[in-house]
Length: 294
Image (cartoon, rainbow, N blue to C red; front, side, top):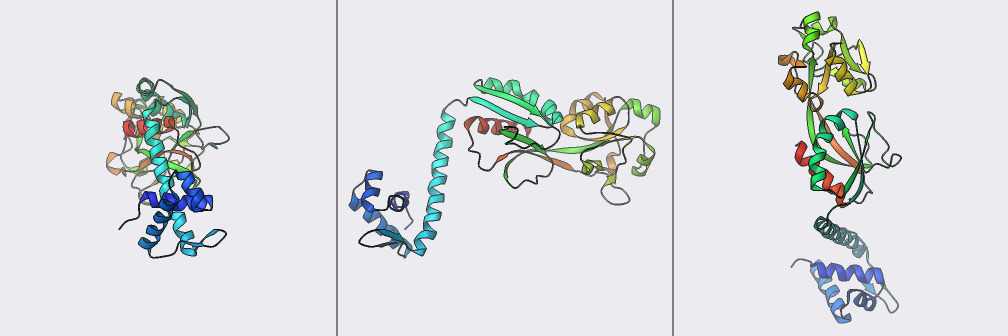
């Protein structure tokens, strides 16, 4: 026979209040009912959970171990009930969101009219930063981060992934010619990232493996600046699909070395601190982004 929630509640109440009588008062039950629940629980588990003395109740070693598990189960149930309750109410209040400027401009902002129509009581404060921000220092509820996560103090909600491609403007090709092999890139002007050297490893099959080390003639800390440099015909760039979809559709940027390109994708996660209690507005925003960006 399985343990019941009523038995777990009785056990926790007795431990927290220190007596069966006080636990009965807390749970609005009879003393005999709480005592029987404890007896059934111990019988099912085949162990003694509490030693009853003339003055107090003391947990046994087995009782202490079981209490930790019982608390986790009951806490999870409380959280589930709270989440369901929050969904019955219209999410409201201020939500602070931080993201790199290219992702904010190209992926988040176009979705906001629909989000605002669905959740008119949520006010959004949008902040952009091309480097990882301190969520507490910047009073940020959610940060959207692109690439591998390193901070173990954060919860992460996967939103999507975005493929990397090597791109160039037709104007640049007309002036400088088209590279036919990966090695030909050494003779061209390349646009790189000045803050994150890892982004200058392009997903191309080269002599050294599935990565080409770009040596930039121009570099910038912002992906959006790199994009505009490429659109202006200043060089060849490697960018994520989320910021170049319209450029590729219109022909403003074209992909190079397609057959040599490795299918490399940047993960996109929404992060928040582990001790953050998820409000209904945070949950609504995360669910909305995950559905639309997937």
